[in-house]
Length: 532
Image 1 (tube, rainbow, N blue to C red):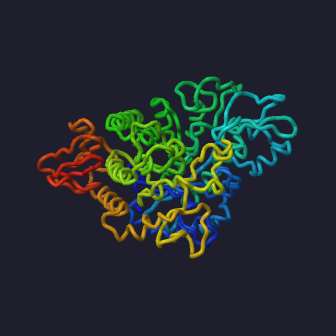
Image 2 (image 1 turned 90 degrees about the vertical axis):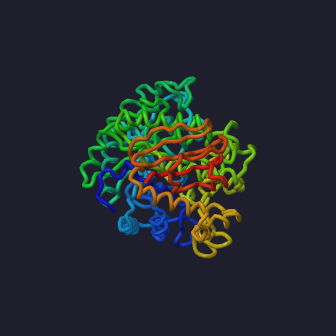
Image 3 (image 1 turned 60 degrees about the horizontal axis):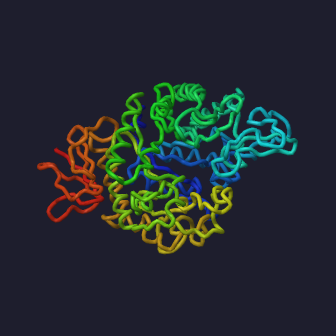
């Protein structure tokens, strides 16, 4: 692992959804020991860091984003000693470690909230007197009202699940406790944090109604993107910068206005942020170019590198999204895909091309576990196993996010596919067709998605043009994208144009799929070129 303090500007970070990555003890839940045992897979893949979804003690009502202790490990995942060994082993392989932090809310089982229910220190959370009706019209992200009444008559706020009470960030005790949590993990070698719901935390004084405003509509909102939240991150940045090397933050911030989104990335605040605009863009050349240009422009304004992501634990896997007509009325959720005809062979071809696109763009990129295997979404999990709170809060009308969280396949021809010891029953069932996507099978196939990812990430490290830096758009046919990066690199991506020729004299160093017999770039294909 290099000591480059700016490693994050070009990093490819692998997202570990720990519950579904690898299970060492056979209880059906992924754990730290399982992750430790698979670090060589990640090192061979060629990523720079791993981001681990919450591993803290939790009742798992929302997949660990309901935290009951921020400075410990859930026993189902392991121990602090095991975490220390994992961090050391990752560093030995040149992999940095980024954890999740959940500052908007705790679990209802957190000792603080138990105190609050008992009438002590209630101002650590957002409680209000309001008679028989909720204090305002706010809605929870998982469905239903954002307020629940406690036996003594007061109401508490939960912008997500009823078991996730919102903290009161006006309270200095809350701020001090989270600063202690940052230092706790930084002192144990953690290289940074991904901040869950980074654009929330602070609520408008008086808690006014939302009214007709949508959850992510532009313009002022009473509980999203309040100006005061930036004071918190400036203090966090001072803490991160006090370490040698400095620690790093990445924001999950759903902010629709480019200028306000960029405020989170000012030099004295957070380092990077997820690029949801790009993730949601349809597979159409004009839409992708618009998203890329907007992203580059808003990040350049504050000197921050962009990041690019195709999938994560909250959206349907991109192979399945790309398997649909890009002009269909779909979004990033599984529920929007159901009933829309799918062609997984086409989705896989597009996913291969999309991988070469994100690895060639300026800045950093994220790989969600299973992306490197080309895993599609599991769209037909039995209803009785669905675990996402969206399923419950929607009255069993929205299937939610479990289809992208099924434990990934490592080896073999039948469940648990090497996820755990023989006989392990994974916490979500794996379909039989996972046998065609195991890491073992793909490692032996030079034409697999895994082989493509390994080649792309190796070249990304070798080619000086890739990573952080500018790009120049190229003149290509309508329905295609092309850009150059210095020194001597170009990407061509044909989405729905007629096949066209690469520039004369350029050397093809990587393709997402075969060129035509006469060397043209066909549809749904990306090409990396050099002039060396």
